[in-house]
Image (cartoon, rainbow, N blue to C red; front, side, top):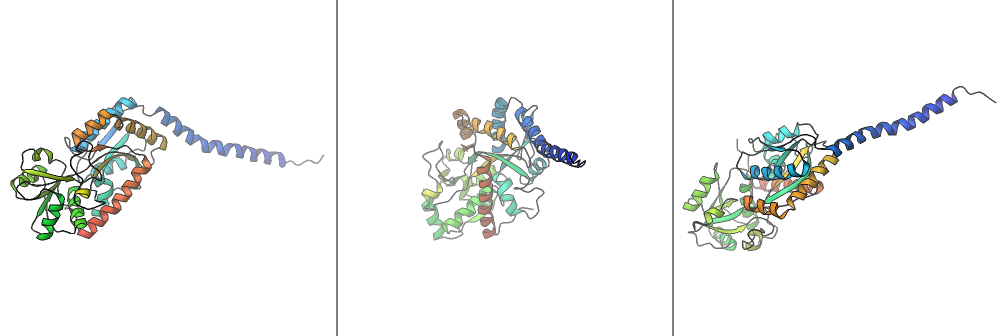
Length: 337
């Protein structure tokens, strides 16, 4: 029988390599799956890009309570306001991709800022893993009650009859309330003068006094109760479940497709294991499906609880980026320095 001294060792090496390669490839996946199965084993930090007391902060605290109860670990809200939400976004983007640092992002963070700022220290698409949209809040379109305007169609007619004679107040240059107004004038083919405010309280006081005539704001209902502000509609695509008698601007103004809602959503640093993203997504969607939580979000923010897949959230981020980029470009809007 011939002797081939190199054959047996070669076959052994080949067999060993064939077995070892799949095992080596499987090792990281096994470790990740084990990590995801145990997640979470310590407190989670939820970074809010807005100051304490605002809508984003209140929503963050509602979410933190619900996630804590479901996940069995504290979810601690950390407020990091500033630079149009970019300070918080950069911090989370640079955090470990392990599920223990999350960001309560908004449409401003991921879809509006890229169109306003030429240089950003985070990439809205590449630096984050979308988890779920949490809630969507529209603006209320309000006018000074002394005006002889009782509907959106009448507002459009008045703006067309005297271009530039009406002005509308917003929360500031390039903010979502400003863009809601620009989308309105674009789709209704009207002209109104934009008046940016640093403080919404001052803006609403001026609306009540008649110094400005129109406001797109999410805090107008209390002013409407005084009789000095008249609510004409909401800027969402559909009527709010909590205020079914208030028509949408789209239906009341004959502007199909008009939608200027602000969404809030959870994201994690890019590279967070999909199994951990799925774990947080399941917990969040379970929470916002609770009627009590949905009612809390409506009464606190005047918005609808949502809950979505990561894929659906990613699609909304992109579509809204395209939409608001067009509005910003067309209106030549520049970010405040």
